[in-house]
Length: 112
Image (cartoon, rainbow, N blue to C red; front, side, top):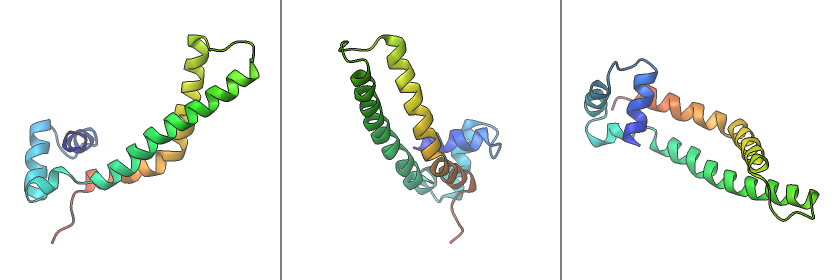
């Protein structure tokens, strides 16, 4: 998670370099805590993303195989098409959570 926080801050222009990002997070976040800004939002994004991807893929795969019944397996291009469709669906569903995660990582910790 620390590398994801630094990467997000460098890409958004908050920091110029990776090393500057780590140093700034360490100072602003009062040590290790700064490196884990947005960890809850990161978990809230990635755990459902993985679960949704597997469940959705298996469901869509079984429905597709039922539609083309005599065959028992899909070609590579069919499997890729099902996977891309699942990725588009879970991207649409989880985009708001990803936005919150990114904003938390860029904003930093509130002052105490």
